Length: 230
Ligand SMILES: *[C@@H]1O[C@H](CO)[C@@H](O)[C@H](O)[C@H]1NC(C)=O
Ligand SMILES: *[C@@H]1O[C@H](CO)[C@@H](O)[C@H](O)[C@H]1NC(C)=O
Image 1 (cartoon, helix red, strand yellow):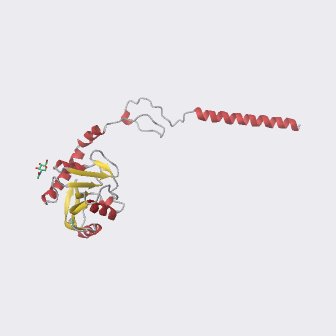
Image 2 (cartoon, rainbow, N blue to C red):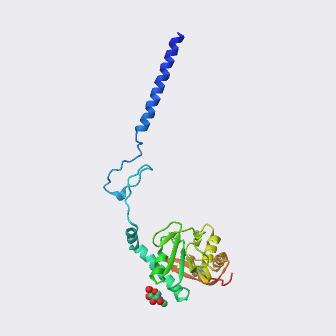
Image 3 (cartoon, rainbow, N blue to C red):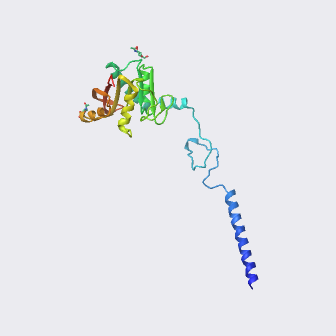
């Protein structure tokens, strides 16, 4: 009796092992259903990756072709033109010249960089956390990869989005030469806020602030000059 039970139990465990092995083998061989075979889609622009294992090649558009497309849109041109009008006012104030070295901090897709180039400024650098070649290179605004005092003018329209505004401000100041210009546009505000903003720039003084319209929005421009001796 005991012997038969032993044989039965042995059989049972062999069966269990076999089933487990087969299941494992099946799992190995089976492609997960979430994996989409790279079939040729009729409308590639409608095809989104369906899962992380969808490794079919994406449509690769060369950067210059992509840029040509982007830069020819009305939306892009309107924004650039708006920046051109704005920077022309800075030129008229005698604070910006064709041979000024300019850095645009948090330059986004680079509208301001293109605007400055268009009005004849020869040396413009744009930086942003995400690069947009050829207009904007990748750099952290809180830690600019430039030596001290290398620019004549630093511009930013994105101080408000900075994680650490005072660090952002001190990096703009650091890279601008003594007697150079720190130029901001911020959401339209009054003199109290302007004073607060200027307070972030410990080594600069306010030249003027004024309400401007930029890219169709009411903004305030804040123009500061860095002190000559630090
Ligand atoms: C600056 O460059 C622009 C565009 O090239 C040109 O039209 C303008 O005359 C230049 N300004 C000066 C002062 O040279
Ligand atoms: C901008 O305009 C607003 C509303 O008219 C005004 O309250 C504010 O003081 C102006 N700011 C500057 C810097 O002139």
